[in-house]
Every structure is written in structure tokens, then in C-alpha cells.
Image 1: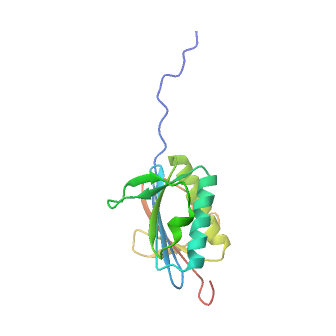
Image 2: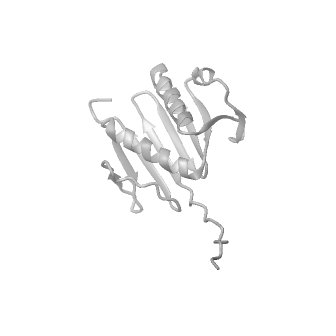
Amino acid sequence: MEQANTRPETEEEPLDLTLSMTNASGHTEMSFSKGQIRLQWSKTSADERGLIRGLVQSASIFGFTPWTVDEDGKPKDKVKKLPGLFRGKKGEIILKGTVKKVKLFSQEMIAGELKDNRIVMEAQKDGTWKILKAGDYKPEGGKKRKIVSSAAVGGG
């Protein structure tokens, strides 16, 4: 007689990744952890906020739910309408999903940055930075990672 597998399914190990994206005027940071992505922006232009709005819309299609953030940085209310969130030069939002979706979306984000010909670097243990190329980034959980993306010199 065959026995059913009674072992509990192991949960995927969450990411601990920070992706900083800098432009000439603004800064956007995405923190990927557990089943959520924290998105913060500051000193952004209207065009950059439009790109952030598009990023949030893409995440929604990917299966994430956007939430506003309270004074303590905790999720407050589920967002019903996106346009009002992007009026100011700075802001913060949390995108709730699953550990698996967070990993997949991080991979899509890094691939997108590389495809847009931006310089993407990952901090190394010895304090140096490694320039990433297509296919270098793998969304592995269990270790703290920091990745920076910026426009190439002379272009954006």
C-alpha cells in the first residue's frame, strides 16, 4: 500500500535584496523581502514618476497588490486608484505578493535594467562592485544583497 507524502512542503527562502536605481535628478529604491516589495522614490521628475507608475502597474499584472504605507512604514490601505500616489516628488508604496513572485519580479527588474543599457552592479563581500551582465543575476534567498543601477556615462 502506497503512503501519501505527509512531509510539509518547505517554504521558499525569501530574498533580502535592495535595488537602487539612480537617474540625473531622482532616486528609486526597491527592497525585495519575504512576500513584498517596498518601493521608495525621491527627488523624481514627472517623467520618472510616470515610469514608477508603469512599474507598479506591471507589478499588478504580475500578481502584486499595491498598498499605501503608514508613518511606521507598515502597509496601511490597499490602493484602489494609482494616479494620486505619484503626484509628489517623493513617496513610498508596498507591493504584496508571494515569495516566489518577489523572486521572479526581481529577476525581471534586473533583466530590464540590463536591457535598457544601464550599468548594473552588485556589491561584493570585499567592498568592491561586480558589473552584472545578462544572465548573471539569480534570485537566491538567504543572503543580503545590494544591486545598483545607473545610466551609462553620457546617456540615460
